[in-house]
Image (tube, rainbow, N blue to C red; front, side):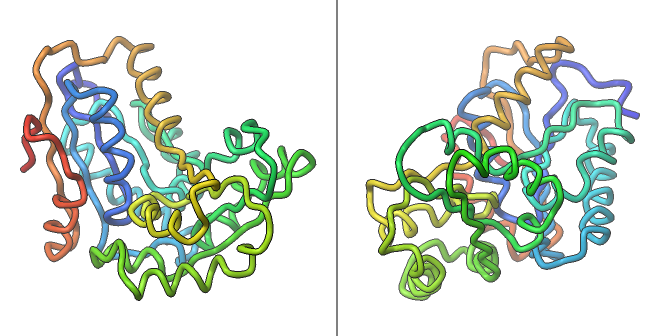
Length: 264
């Protein structure tokens, strides 16, 4: 599979819906001359409330799309899909498959005093992969799991701010607002779209981070290792696809790409 790729071949980004756009935006910032193809499976969103086997099946179905598109690498820009399927994907395909994980390590290493809150889907927080990661740091800092079922649906509907979102977030965060919080880790790629709303609730002293930067650094490292970094001088293209036509417009507006990038 994928034997005919070259430096100009696009990079695939996959998510259960709109969320992975937040990761692809980071890729375009750091590697603007690459070409990108995004596929969001909003028709089957949210993934975070599904069984791991179903998420794995849906993720492999998406890989068929990328195989037909001739991508040179795929970023699974979905924490839930990464937890459920990344191992089997890497065993099946002979191109770089990069997953995303909650940014617990940088939160711990910041040495900032206070609790670390991991906001993520119920499934991500329950998966063995995540809990193994969390166990590495449990003796160093107080780390709290905060499932946020329902937040993905706001983002999928293009609702990133407003009274309804604020009320939802206040209810989730209220048990911790009277204690010292150092960092909130956004463990779902949908959540950066409501980062400003979260910041308004917890205050500017609380760091809010996600795993997108580390993911794109790993993508670049993998492509450099196999000599597939695009060396064209002009900016590349971005193509956005979704299993639900209704969501495609929301995704394009959420991308907020520079005018120099062509979206189709």
